[in-house]
Length: 158
Figure 1 (spheres, one colour):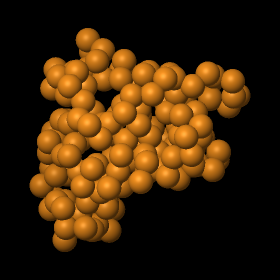
Figure 2 (cartoon, helix red, strand yellow):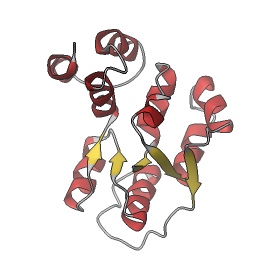
Figure 3 (tube, one colour):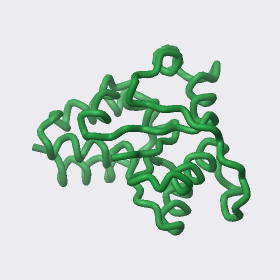
Figure 4 (tube, helix red, strand yellow):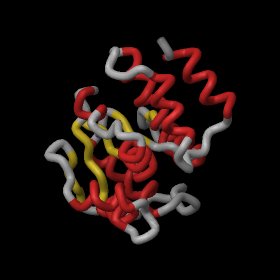
């Protein structure tokens, strides 16, 4: 299955030590150059920059699609490029965390999930124990309401 990813889900999967869940979920991930630039930015965590400097074989870097569409202007460059790339390659899934980007992608007919959806699917398949992974996520700068984290644990936790 082909997925296009924005920076946030990749960043946090790296930070919590679970980036290898993506290929275990049978995902081959395409990322636009704008997302790679975000992952390599000097403000990105060192661990993320190191990972993005030596990408695994299941990640492919794609050219940024031309921004010919309207309705994306309020999104960050990586989100815009990810949505346009997902449309252009007819991706099976797009990984986005920001609410506005998720709404735009869904409105454009894309199948959307985020970091918590990936973790939930991994827990459902028995690849992770969700509670300790969520605990590690809480130690990062990931922004999610306590209610959303609890709902994720209630839905997917074992």
